[in-house]
Image 1: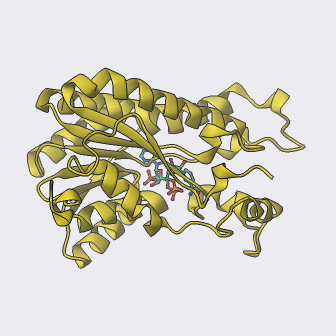
Image 2 (image 1 turned 30 degrees about the vertical axis):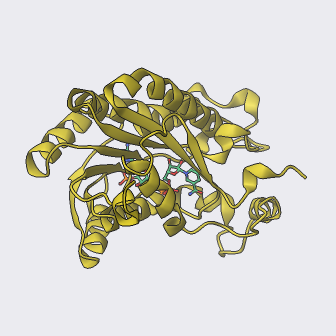
Length: 272
Ligand SMILES: NC(=O)c1ccc[n+]([C@@H]2O[C@H](COP(=O)([O-])OP(=O)(O)OC[C@H]3O[C@@H](n4cnc5c(N)ncnc54)[C@H](OP(=O)(O)O)[C@@H]3O)[C@@H](O)[C@H]2O)c1
């Protein structure tokens, strides 16, 4: 039996967090660094990436920014090569790039029947292809070769039960859950574990317009979300730390693959 500190230590691990330039990815990158991992902060925005790196350095952790477009296999391969040569072999991958593309959001002016195919495609590209599929292919291949790794995909409550309006996002996130379970079985023989986290509602850039009016007041949707959340509040990004460290740690979650951890204030546990 490992000591408690060993169970949750990520010392010596190299973690890649794609979308560490965003609200949830940045918090998870900081959590992994706090547990001892060296973190490759990936995303398109250098400015927000450097901010995340600086936050990690400020707590005594190790991190570097790698400009990455998750929608491009070439960009992911370049980032992977740079990370390997400058930091070492990657053993943890967190896929936190994603979000709802509003072009496919159902509104009275944009009913389901007329959502353009391109808007559906944009949601699937961002959340399924760039948000999980391509990074799993690129980083997973190296993990298979080294016979160890932990991949953590980020799903959504809408992957389990579709939310109103964000139909394409919900369908793409449901596909992320399916891909996660498929890869858990596919890569278990190679020592690569694949799990997901389902965050509930956390205010971030990608959902700001759905949750808040221009004057900052809560939208009707926010009121109904909170009424449906047993803990009666939004989550705070640091509240994902426990789940991501647990799934990343090969000591703490060595027998865990293909599972999904809900960090949702109880949202998926109640109907009415
Ligand atoms: N906030 C919530 O309530 C909530 C709930 C459930 C699930 N989620 C999921 O959690 C994940 C993080 O979202 P968030 O809420 O933290 O939103 P956010 O702050 O808007 O972050 C989204 C991230 O996606 C990255 N991204 C977008 N396109 C990219 C691309 N082509 N290549 C690389 N990175 C790209 C952005 O980075 P760059 O702009 O730097 O590229 C940004 O870091 C998403 O998958 C989201 O669907 C969020």
